[in-house]
Image (tube, rainbow, N blue to C red; front, top):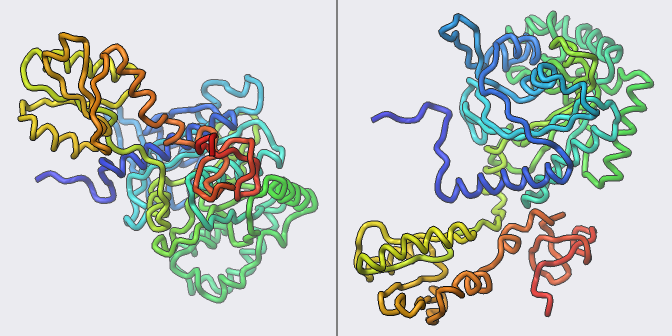
Length: 466
């Protein structure tokens, strides 16, 4: 039997509905923030990642899926999203458009590493990039955008950990300090650390082998080496985060694993013990030199990426109940060929009018069809019979209350519209600012009219008569 590759998974059934719900929330929030969707190739020239991500990054040195195509070109399955978007920004001359350029993506990435909770070899990430603005306010917006997506999904105990690597001058001074600190002990460390000391000392701080030693714990921090301009800039980022009411902690240990970062770096940390050391569900930072490094014009940039796989684990472990629509609206039943023909026609008409409809495909008995309707979670059942159809009528049954009515076929769409909950009631994120409790005491999604438990101004979607 052929099986899926190690580190990959099949997404189907209820898990697929949760997956789609997360993607819909991401799409909705990105639209509200005026970020445009971008799709880049799943594979790119290997040079893009060697130059863009950096030769000393573990992603390039250990984790990429590399291959040579039939044209003898070196290609790599994309391990992350930023480099490909920057390549597209340069190639399509987006820098000639009005700045800043605000983009978001959602797609699969590939990294050859040991699979673990929330981290597969084929992983799915969504993220956002802003190119063309060096304003600290954009750094704060990117952080708050990421945080608000988690909040809308209902995740709890998410705190944004932030740090600053400073400008090139600050980073150079910090690099020298790390070399002075680690050089006397380097022979005690792993081979990776020995290589990194000369190529990129900041990468030593990501070591998974020796990271718990006292030498690492006592290493200098980036904040101690920020020059005045970098320090003021970092203070402005924190000021904007305070305005946006984003919970954050300054974490001097954050340096991020990719070589292109400078100034603001951040991680979204969630308190879910099952994720273990992988409790970072999203991260990012500023990369003001990357566009130039890839042969584009001098352009500041900042962005983040977040793993859907880890979010799924966190949602499950925190027992977050998402408003997932389950079951179908209507199941059409029939016995003879005339009724079957009409079921074929009616199912399509209702589907094109926005209803989730299914019917019988295997010529089962009415008793078996009733069971199938229950298995599909049908809210209503329509039993077609030739006599009713001749009278332009249809017999419809509420599968929960078991109440049955005969109505005009012409009124069926209006009947279902009235009886079924709307998409807005089920998927409130389009107008949602939070998942907290509102004044009525129930969990609801909100708009901007009444006060809810989060302290914002929200309006409950409950029955207006209440």
